[in-house]
Amino acid sequence: MTTEVKQISNLTAPLEALLKSSAHKYAHGHALVLCGGSGKGGAARLAARAALRIGAGVVTVGCPADAVAENAAQLNAVMIRAIHDGDALARTLGDKRFNALCLGPGLGQARACELVPVALASQRGCVLDADALSAFENAPSVLFQMLHEGCVLTPHAGEFARLFPDLSAKISSVETPEYSKVDATRDAARRAGCVVVFKGEKTVIAGPAGHAAIHAASGARAAPWLATAGSGDVLAGFIAGLLARGFSPVQASEAATYLHVECALSFGPGLIAEDLAEELPCVFRRLGL
Image 1: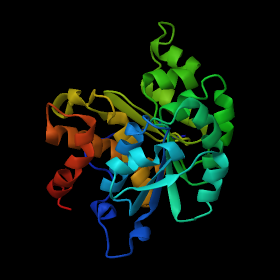
Image 2: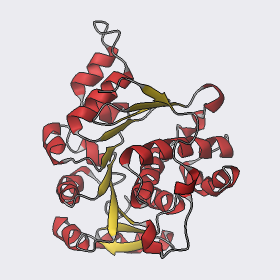
Image 3: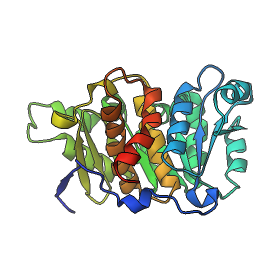
């Protein structure tokens, strides 16, 4: 197992990977973002728009029938599909063009318990965030048994503690002062069998084979205005969009984390979550895309 820790201060993915050819939209992937019922769709809409902005060819929001009108009133380029339950999701995933999923933002824990197993059984690239993580607080091993190498978990500190209580406790224990956030994220990724993005001012990205990278949003890259509701939903959408485009889970997570902070730095103080994806074209232009 590698012990090297990469410091992310620049875009690690090759720039050409972010470019689009003149191919058909479906050549750039179709991301499906699952959301909750009426009044619960804001977080999923943020994630969906982020996936579209980062270059997924097509993005669909899947919601209960009672939330279709609400979501349709606020989304234009993002498509809407009524997905009431696990059976409806399974039928939807019969369309093999859906190649990346995002579950958690605004999903609701009861809905997560029904939809997450179906999503994971499809073996698509899958980002699990928010409710899709917290729903398994009382049985994390059940979630871990379903995960596969195409998955990315994106917990903040609270969600990390719900899924990995022993690792979380070990970070802060005076008895293990040498045990770091990097160690905990590596151990979590090994236990889950997939990439874990442990969010925070210092975001750690680790894979099950021991790969680890740190993105520290501090010093010259400090972006405290990212501490705003919905910013994590946008990050989940960025990762899902890059998975749809064919990035590996590690590549997608590292590139998305870097671009997420770049958008915040580009916009500056006063940022709200809606601004992040809309700032991405400016960041792309500055990168020479």
